[in-house]
Image 1 (cartoon, rainbow, N blue to C red):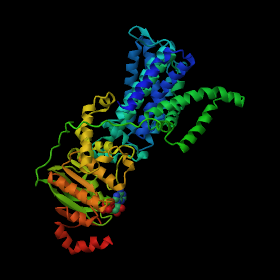
Image 2 (image 1 turned 90 degrees about the horizontal axis):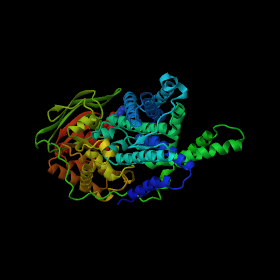
Image 3 (image 1 turned 90 degrees about the vertical axis):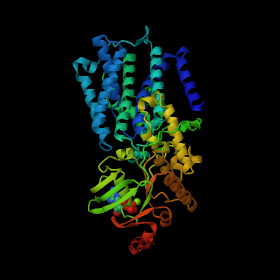
Image 4 (image 1 turned 45 degrees about the vertical axis):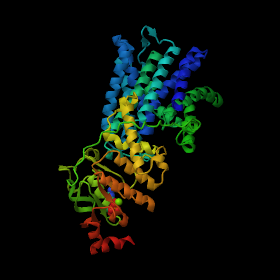
Length: 592
Ligand code: ADP
Ligand code: MG
């Protein structure tokens, strides 16, 4: 069994029996709050730590969960379980609307929108007669299940920690899955972004919305538990300052890891209480001085351990080991591919301008199924831009692109990927803190289906094994099987390029676009790569590659297209191109 899983089981067992031991009520209450805070902070780990999206509005989502249930139970006499359902429904709708409006826009809109929404909700709760204005709602009933009432703090404790640990497990499972790999690829501050996952077929917008909704739902459950623990609600714990405090907990504990949420919640709750007693005594007057201390602590943590406290503790724990994928795992379904010799790709007068610069000037060329076509030209000739136009990463300024008789220009990159084009990037786009195997597995995105809910419930394991098996197979093919459990960020640039090729191959494309695949490789590695590419061609795959190394291209390509300053110069067989005086002048001349 995985040592991590044993650790988790031991922790859960310990937490389960704790209230049966003679633990003072004070500590049970503390633990209740820690569990409630951790649930909210857990959402922030997913949203902010993993996804790179900041929200100050998580306390407000907790408010929705708390108020919805308190209102329903007190005015309609409904069961708190019905209140939970209403709270989750309202939260999901609000988060969807808010996410839909803001997540398409760049960086700062989401945090601003969550602040605005926090303030709006706070004043709504405080001013509505039906919600008791600033006095809130009193006499909220306690939760009961099968005749057992969770009335005492010790009983609420079980409900809270069941929710907190189930939430943690769900997020851990989610992150280790098909949707989770996309989510982990999004955070720009960790070397991610949207271009790569889109090129692998994922709608990054849809994933951002999902993460936002999941985080909001976690907060909402926390609010519901809080309302039925306190047996009353009022607006103050759901205001913007609590929204900030949750973010503080997550950052302090370690916003990149699930257990960071728990570490942060525990540290903040325990020290807050101590400081609230201690500081006024030291200073001699009452006041929320602990806020100042927290501010200082946060700055110190960000300076000396920017990843928070948990990663420092985690170093003492056994590393997570991925169980080997059984060799008899069935392969993923193959994707449809054209017959050798059929027209595959056709670029017609493709044009791209950046302001006044014509980066690609009416370029036309074609790729026949089963061929290797090379695009060469000096630096800045427009080769990478041509790739971006073909793969849908950039919109065309003019011209057309056809794939197997269908027009594909104007389609988003993920749709182009769905139709069978896969690519690598000149500036390598791997997720540095994911393993090599996980990075390659992103390539299987379009050949697999498991969604977020299936992942959280661990119903995706059979398909996941097939995806990882495929990733292993592609890594073995390019000679990197040994490095599969290495973090991608630790590899040298040459091997990183190979990992990108394996990732592209894992999507089983009809056409593979490679942007300078041999750059940074040593001579032996280049020869090995050329052998792999020839093998791919022999298997019927078509390749379009950009390359600098003339020898590499000349011994590999069926046809060569030469570009210079964005314009088409010559096209022909390697021998014809080598013989061309224009190419010698333009390309070889600038090589020196
Ligand atoms: P190559 O891959 O052949 O070296 P590129 O396609 O990267 O060339 O670039 C072609 C030209 O377009 C260069 O002059 C480059 O500076 C310019 N260019 C590329 N991308 C952009 C962009 N996003 N904005 C503005 N100019 C760009
Ligand atoms: Mg380039």
